[in-house]
Image 1 (cartoon, rainbow, N blue to C red):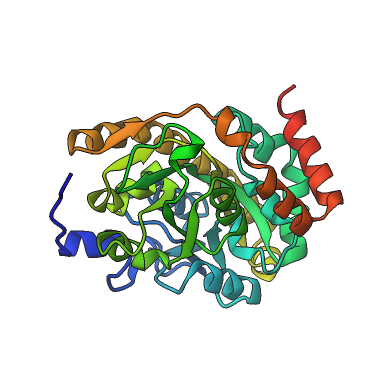
Image 2: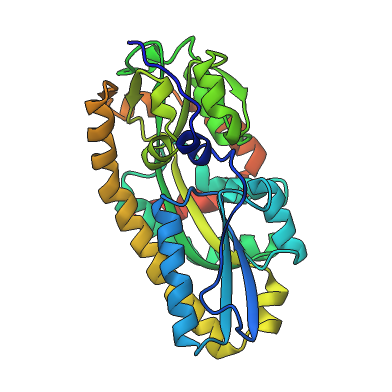
Length: 336
């Protein structure tokens, strides 16, 4: 299937190449001004939920807390802004735990391929059985955890063929982010991988530098990656969370106990709103893409999981046996 590619303003904004997008706090004269960074496009449910959260926090604190949102990687790459938040240059961040793997040898357990059965299972692990473990790992890495938001289960798109079985992935050249779990998963399936920065993914797809890419459906849709692809497979190989965290000094020293409670309550509410919107929006996005000519497949998960042995060996070595065993028990506990 052929499709014309136009680098118009809409695409450039969606792909993250535009000028920084800054959403000013509604309480600009607040006594405490905070900066919140995240990588999502302004049309993404994560950003929309964050905007509502910021407004509620301002209202509930009587204007004492004002939060300015810097969307779409306006302050730097996800790894750069994570480091800035850790050092205190940024106050709050919505981040994928994979962005701090250089700071934490354990947090990557969250991204082990094919470990979550469905959304409910993933939520129960992150919110309940592994909550204290995650909070401790983030604290050790230099972050105060506040709430869980959501990207969603990752799906594979490509321009060459439909993916129904693991064998269909063999030989594909897949763009991956600099995340060990994703790279290991695709290489275990026989694909070759190439790391490409997010803002360069569309051009890499359009110019056939790579055959495909993987992202949650909402991201593939919002960034218009499907315009340069023919096929989308709902492989659900990795569940991608995005977590709201704060610099510990900001969290503990600049905010009162009451303010922290309000921010926590509104953040958890916003995270749940983002989750609902991501999930409800997936099928609508899929239907839209199908209407535009994208062939969508829904392959069975088990044959793919059965191929993950080499990836699991690689990840277990990186995480360590103790972390692997501890995390595995927390994932299993959420099934009871």
